[in-house]
Image 1 (spheres, rainbow, N blue to C red):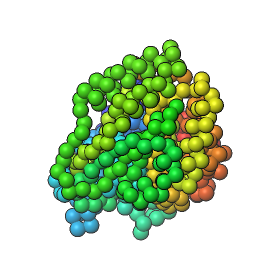
Image 2: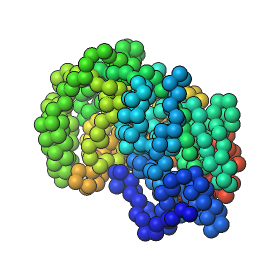
Image 3: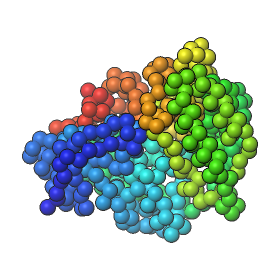
Image 4: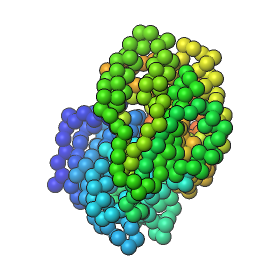
Length: 440
C-alpha cells in the first residue's frame, strides 16, 4: 500500500513558484503509482508527476496529488551492442553519468544542469547546443507510458509510433513516464575553448562558427558589443582546467551578486557591471578539457528568472540586433549578462520547439541577488514581442505568457498533440493551471 504525506510544500529550484499538493507520494514501484492513479480516479483528483523541480515555471505545480519519482531511479539495462541504456524515469542525469562511464558510454549531448530526471528533461524539451544535434528528447529510442486508466503503453518508432512522436516532449500531460531507453555514444572527452569577440563579428560569420565547432554557443553582454564565443569539440587531450576558485567564485559569484544587488538601487550600474565583468573574466582565451558530461554541465550560480525561445536559425541576426536596438533606445530597461545563444537541428517531435526547423535559442536572464527581484517586465515584454515576431516558440519549462491561441499558430502539429492528449487523458487528470493555459 502506498502512503502519501499531507502538508508537503513544493518549491522549484529558483524559488519562483511553489504549491501545496493535497497529497505527496514517493512511489517505489509501478504498482504503487497505479494505486495513486486509482485513488485519483475515485476521488476525482488531479495528478502531477515531478522530477528534479528545476523548471523555472509553474509547470510542476498542483493542488491535487503530487507524485515524486525520485525513488524510481535505477538503470534497468545496458545494451552494449546497440549502445543503448534503459532507465527508470526518475533517475537524475547526475546519477546516470557515472553508471554510463563504467560501461564506456555517454550521452551525445546534455543540458547545463544534471540534477534533473530523465523524464523531466525530455518532457520539457530541454536542449543544449550544436547544429547537428537535436534537443535531448531526440536521443530517446523508446519509452513506456502509464496512462490515466492504468494501461501501460510501450512506445517507439515501431510501436505506438504516433504516441511516441508526442510523448518525447510530453509536458507531463499524457500520463506517467515509467522507463526511457536512450541512444548513447562511446564515451568521449571534450575540449572547451572560449575567446572574446563582438556581436557584429559573430552574427556576420555565424555559418563559419557553426561549421567550425560541433557544440558552438556564444554569450552576449547586453549594453555592449561584447561577446564570449565558446567552442566545445571532441579531443584526446588529458583533462585540464582553467577554472580558478578566486576568479570563478569570489569574483564571478560573490562580487557579482553584491554589485547586482547594489544596481537595484542604481539601475544605471547594470551596463557598467556587464562591461566590467566581461573585461575581468572573459577577455582572455581559456581552454579546458574533460569527460563530455563534465564539460557540458556547469553550475547555475544564483536564483534567477529566465526566458528561452527557439526561433528559426536564419532569424538569429535580426532578432539579436533588434533586442540590442531596443535596449539602446530605452536606457531605463536593464538586462543582466549573459544573453546565451545556442543552436539545435530540427526534429519531428510534435511539441518540440525545433519541430521541422533548425533553430536558434536565445536565453535571457535576470538574476535575483540575495533573493531580491529586479524589475524585468519591460525587458521581458520587449523580448517576447521580438521572439513572436520572428516566429519563436518558448521553452516549455521556462516562464512565458503564451496561451493556446499562440501555440496553435506556432505548432503545425498542435491539433494532433491535443487529440492524442484527449484520447489518453479524457478527464484531464494530468492537467494543472500551467497546462490549462496551453490547452484551453
